[in-house]
Image 1: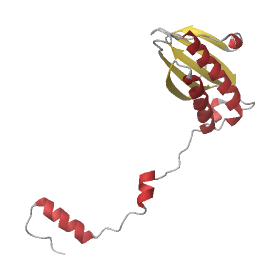
Image 2 (image 1 turned 90 degrees about the horizontal axis):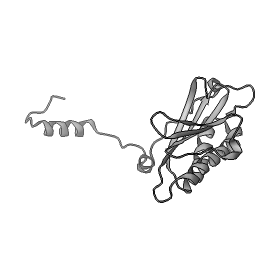
Image 3 (image 1 turned 180 degrees about the horizontal axis):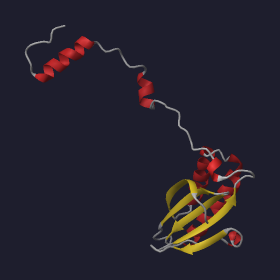
Image 4 (image 1 turned 30 degrees about the vertical axis):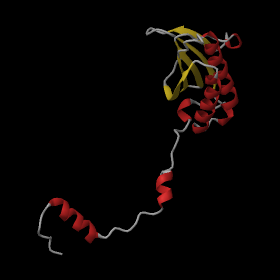
Length: 167
């Protein structure tokens, strides 16, 4: 868990069984946005294991919050789960995974996955959004033409002036 973080995305979840599927969707969406689709299956499975382990140790009567975070750093994608009660699943022990106590309280379970060969975090492009109109604006269609004289009369009326500007 070292190197400069190039990109990060996170999501806060309640430590309930539904968080496992939501974490899977979150990872797949984020990696799709980062154009790392080849890593989606492995990263989603890792996230499912980390979140599942946190859900297993959570109090079902009073579940806490979890924060799942994806970080691109150096030649790795780090999948992290932070919360008051988290655990490292046995299948992820060893290698590039761990569990650390946080100074502010709680714990962080993490696992690093190598980026595809020849790629580093700085080479991953930032997501781009195409300019789009909202669905409500699309339903209204094109903006109607505005008559400048009507606007002038409205402004004149709002101003309280009795005289009109010369045209």
